[in-house]
Length: 363
Ligand code: PLP
Ligand code: COI
Image (cartoon, rainbow, N blue to C red; front, side, top):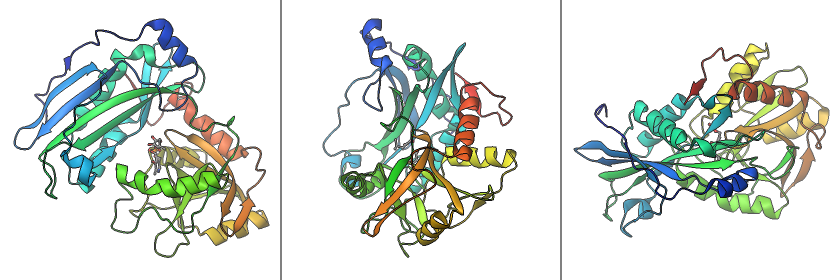
């Protein structure tokens, strides 16, 4: 199904938010609570394919209580950002998000969305809502493409109808602090994904299952939950919404390998490329929590950071679990490699450094 004949209809919001009100919200948007005037929608019907593409006023959905997604959680999403540059807006590696969206769709028995429709939907929304792209440092327009199973049926089978949508939210920093190191909590009970499960897919269920451990993290004074592997409870996997990197005294880096249980982060992939271009060695290999503790104590491990679209690059300064806690490097400030890689990434994203990999796309 090429989707080549699908054309976007544009129905402008008849009552967009007044500029004064919008600008007041843009001054301090926080994360994920403010939304733009429009949304993109494309529908899918088995036998007919993708149809009824449109950009229209953002509004509540009418969802039948028997819609499949409400019962069996056939849902996937993406997270990406548009950045304001001198002469408009840019997206960072949107083609990679389109591919991952389809990989998630495959895992959840949902239809493939042709890559050009994904890209068009996102670009058209950013174009229409361009005044909502923040201009202050650290601000961006967070884009949330997602797909839900919309067939009205209670049988357990892949839905015959789907709704794909994109909503947009101006955002500042994901973490509340001033960019200093964050702390992570290892739950004794909960794991995120097992071999053969949905860990590599960006599906809502993974996040629902992470919430109890995340609540435990907050109760224990930590910012995020860090998951270990489900089988041996030993190997570091990822955070609830971010991948993780380790920086050693010899300047090399390590990050958990993509073995099907963690999300293949686009930030992760970009940082591997940037670090290698700097001449640094990056190993994609398993790293155990015991080794982490031992290397932190001996000084062999110098820095740890989390990375993802929402969080960008955030140093990790402390690890806590029911067994106790330990710190890495100076828990008050991020290390030099973390700081340098973050700057290299952000400079490309904002068009302030050359883009040798062709990652940035103009809207
Ligand atoms: N891991 C999880 C579980 C995530 O939710 C995210 C965020 O999207 C990431 C990793 C990082 O992925 P990306 O860099 O593509 O945003
Ligand atoms: C993202 O970084 O885009 C995510 O989806 C993660 C979530 C914590 C907001």
